[in-house]
Length: 393
Image (tube, rainbow, N blue to C red; front, side):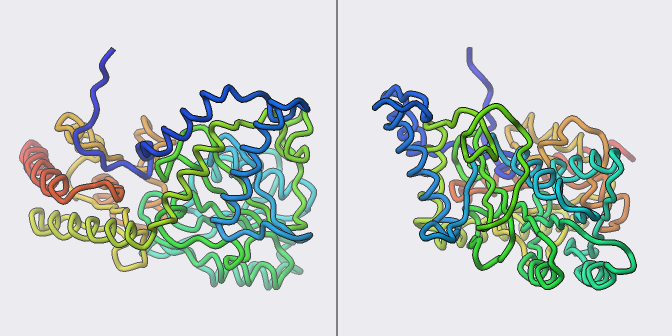
């Protein structure tokens, strides 16, 4: 069966296309016919070596401490959603108090928080500015008034927004939290491979990453834990990963993840410069061709590859569909909310005009994107926006 593939792929925040080197590494591991990494025989020990090598390498590449008695931990999971859920539930389960999440978090964080609220847990939503940056003044106030307003158990704040690309002041938030004795988790899924990422420098207690956003395989992610942080397991039935996340570990996916991280970090500065140049070119050419187009979050520091842009008077879903039919892949927001007709909760939290929210789409590039693809995308986009605008008159 042949599948139709977009000619121009600009949806890398949803998932990136697998690097051929990652594919080769995974094929190599599959040909080894690795056994269960928990088995005590030689085949099991060989698989264990693959998993542990990947764990140590990824932790090191992310700036975690991987040596000595104070080493941090990296727990493999099925992806970003599981890691976020494990952090929210596992870090807060045995600590009383409210859970603070930002209003612009990924659905996997917001849905976990909403579930806990339905079970009686207090949830506080941290607002953001019109530029898409969370309001640390509000967090500081909540932390300072815990004796009056009630204790805070956990803060979860993403490192960069998946829709706008706007970078968040996580290191500053971590300093505030630790001064008040509060745990903090960050969702860094979109940052790994797109910007410098150092777990130690961020000084957070837990960090979510995943492989498929940086040309690695779908189906594997990780939760990085600072040394000494206690985590209540949310699944049961095995002793793997110290019982924090039991279940048979996956050597092939672990090896693919390791290769993807190594590739991304080996030439990170060049990749970042390439993506930023292409993103800025795309933004400039769209605004020049469609004067009423609005680049969302453009006044803030952003990831180099993400462009959230709105076309007032145009329906975002009709636009995305028309672009898809023209061979251009983009999105109207988080892929985890695809199929939903609800407006973007991120753009709503930024208190943007309804016409901007209704007309907003997201382009997310990679270092593989070509300048001619940018030109072709702008040409198609311009014609489609003009057609959709004319049809409303």
